[in-house]
Amino acid sequence: MGSLQRWWARWKQKLRLETQLLFVATLVVSLVVSSFTFWAVSTVQQDARFNEARFGRDLGLLLAANVAPLIAEDRIGEVAQLSRQYLRAPAASAICSMPIPKETSTTGSRFPTKR
Image (cartoon, rainbow, N blue to C red):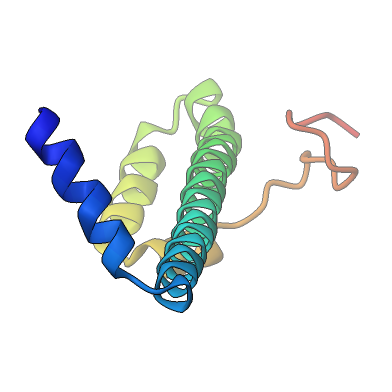
């Protein structure tokens, strides 16, 4: 280990001050840029997880609001038809084509409410 330290000390002495400052500045810029990139990627991943969870919750509530009344009225055939319609269509068109139940509140409540 001692020979490595001596080599490092001799190597540093050979470099001019400008070269050492350039080396340090490059290292600092590299660390700042990599830190910023890590922060940006982490933020995007966190937003994606949040949106995915919100999408799943909203989709579950929408499906429950459409299926619960059908099951309560024992209209299982319509539940099967709704399930087939949902499974055959791409995700966005399936969600957009589902009717919003009349008893669902538009006040932003998480649960359907009776009017």
